[in-house]
Image 1 (tube, one colour):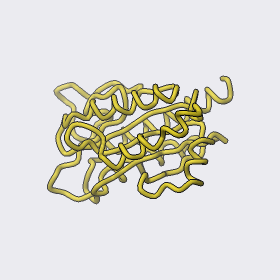
Image 2: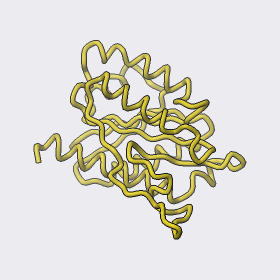
Image 3: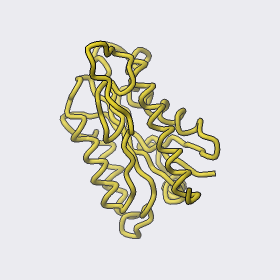
Image 4: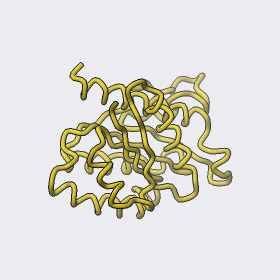
Amino acid sequence: MVKIAIVFHSGYGHTARQAAAVHQGADSVVGASATLYPVNELTEAHWAELNAADAIIFGAPTYMGNASADFKKFADASSKPWFAQAWRNKIAGGFTNSASLNGDKYATLMSFVTLAMQHSMIWVGTGMLPANSSQAHRNDINRLGSFIGAMAQSDSDVGADLAPPEGDLATARQYGKRIAEITLQYVKGG
C-alpha cells in the first residue's frame, strides 16, 4: 500500500474542500491510502508520517500572490526533513484556490514546485488538457488550464458549501488519482 500525504492550509474552508477532493481521488486508487494533514494541526507524529509517505501533495489558498502564511510556516518548518533529505525521491504535487480566476495561482504552484525541488522530490503535473473552447463552461475539468497542479476558483461572496464549483473539484479528484497512480507505478517499479 502506497501512502499519499496531503498537507494543506485553508483559511475559509474552500481549499479544505479542494483538499478533500484530492484525497477522494488519491484514495480511490486500489493500493493507495491517502491522509489529509492540515498544517495547523501537525504534531511530531505527523511529521514522522510525512517522512514515511511515498508522496506528498501540497495545498494552500493563494493570498496576495502566493501561498498563505500558514502554509509558508509549514514550508519553513520542513527545513528539518530537508537537512536530512528525508523527502528525497518522493512523488510531489500541489493545488491552490483563490477568489479570482487568475489570482496569481501560478506563483503559488511554482512555490510548491520550488519546495519540492529543494527536497529533491519528483513533481507530477495534472496531465489534463485545458477546457478552453468556446463551448467550455464552469464545470469542465481543468477549466482554469493548469498543467503544473490543480487550480480552483471560489467566488468571494459564497461559502465553502458552494465553492469551488464542481468542475474544479472534479479536476482535484482526477489530479489526486493521477498522483496515486504514478506513485504506485514508481514505488512498484512498473
